[in-house]
Structure formats: structure tokens, C-alpha cells
Length: 248
Ligand code: SAH
Picture 1: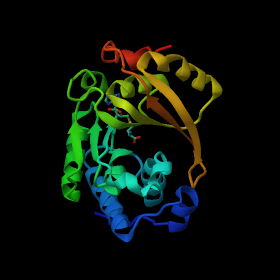
Picture 2: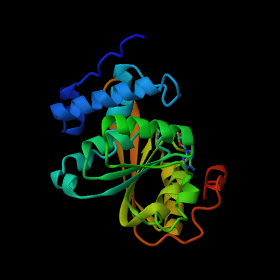
Picture 3: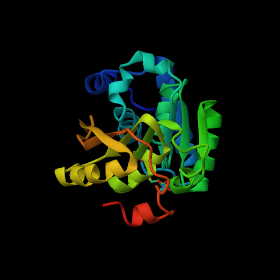
Picture 4: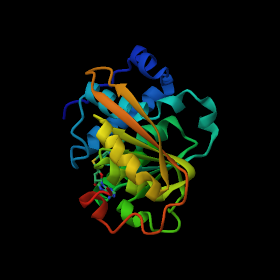
């Protein structure tokens, strides 16, 4: 078996783009995460992104750029925030956040049981104690009393159309909580369609933050939602519906 190469650590790029950089300890934790994901990926397809540069840019950097404004707020690290990563797949963006913020509790949710089992294995290998696991669909989790309106921060990357993501996220968020929808391209039409449905879910658009990935100059937009009122019990609709017929 070939040895997995080590991750790059372009501190200048971290600084230039996020005004933040990992400590040496954190960088070695990122390296451990990379090695663990690549190893498990040989038996279960968690991600297609496995070269060191791609992993750094598309998984690590991208996961953290979504919360860029918060990385600089040192006080946040002390707050015991409850975070949910909906449709986490190979653990992104949730796992890098769990490494950066040991004081946060990060729940990795995915409808695919095998992926969640693999992430449990990765987390055990890394000795992570602040990660929880849910092998269920968001539409089901959101109707369980212990999870409904229980998360301060909801994250979704590459899980579906924007309005589908909003319907998954808002029922799970506490009043005053926020969601970060990690998007690629963004348009005024998409924004209008989102704004049109948010009041029904108890949400409000806070901002759309554009970013450019540092190595290949990829387009990113982070859509930040605030939860401003309770979400009616009828949301999310039955499993499959939010994806099949997004709210309009
Ligand atoms: N967030 C990861 C994975 C994206 S792939 C990343 O950006 O790399 C989308 C993942 O969402 C898949 O693993 C799929 O199983 C999961 N998913 C899709 N719909 C879901 C739902 N309704 N509830 C929970 N997980 C869902």
C-alpha cells in the first residue's frame, strides 16, 4: 500500500483568506483526520477528494471558510455551542469544526448508516469526544422532541437545493440560532426564491457571503440564516418531499 502524502499547511493562504491559521497542534490533528479519512475511504466511498491539495482546499479550508467571521472571535471557542451538520457525508464541514472547537458539540447527521458508522470509527481513532452521530434523515430527526429546535448552528454543504436545505435546517435550530448553507454559484433569482419561503419556516436571511477558494479560485457563497420565530410543526414535510418539491 502506498503511503498517503502529508497535507500542505499554507499558513499564508489561511491568513490571507480567513485571517486565521491553525496552531501546530491543530495542524497535526488535521493531518490525522486526513490520514484516517483516506484509510477508511479504501473500503467505503466517503469522498472523491483525496489528494493532499484537494483535501486541504475542498474539505478543510472550505469547511472552515463557512464560519470565517466566527474564527476570529476567540470568545466563541469558550461557548458550548450545539452544532448539527446535516448530510455530513464524509464528515464535512462538521469534523474540521469539531477539531477547531473542542468545546462545541457537533452532531454529524446522514441518512446513510454506513457513512455514519465510518465517521464513528474515524472519530474514535482521533479520540474526539465532542462528536455525536445520527444515522437518520433530517425530516425524521426534526420531528423528534429532543432534537427539534435544539441546535445553535446548522450546517449544510452539498445536500440539495437551497429551499430544501432551509426546510431541513430551520426546524432543528434554536430561536436565535443560525444556519450556514454552503453554496457554490449564487443568483438574485435564487435569493428571491429563498426569501419568499423563509417566513413560513421562521427564518430570515442574514447575509450572503461570497468567497473564492485559494488554490483554484472556485466560487463559494455562504448563505447565513437566522431563526427568528418558531417553525410550525408541519415542517419539515414527509421524508423525500422537501427534496422532491422544494417550497416555493
Ligand atoms: N456534506 C458533505 C456530503 C455531501 S453529499 C460534503 O459536502 O462533502 C450529501 C449527503 O447528504 C449524502 O451523504 C446523503 O446521504 C446526505 N443526505 C441527503 N439528504 C438527506 C436527508 N434528508 N437527511 C440526512 N442526510 C441526507
